[in-house]
Length: 108
Image (tube, rainbow, N blue to C red; front, side, top):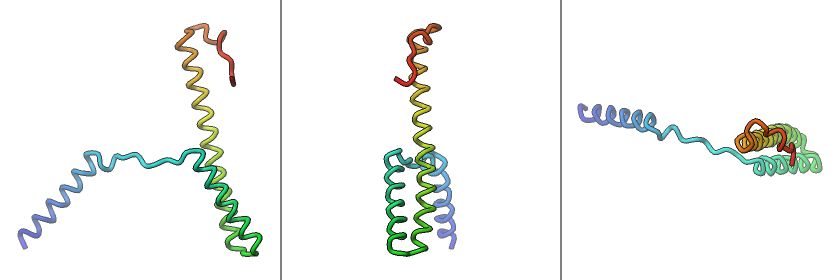
């Protein structure tokens, strides 16, 4: 009984130490815009299938899924556009200093 309690205590302490030292700090995977677009298209196909086969539940679930996936895709696409524009502006500012606006061409 005494050794069993020690073993449990050591395993709990090891688990806590492992998660606090970095194993739990791994960044979760994040979908790209292409993956989000493909998910939207696939869910749209599920919706179309449900409508063509007159399966009401499949069509409703597919429609809701398509709407959510499209919304997430649109937000990610806008975020990428915004961050790339910010990187371009920062590059011009670093290269040309105060007169960066004379050289900056938006949207090119």
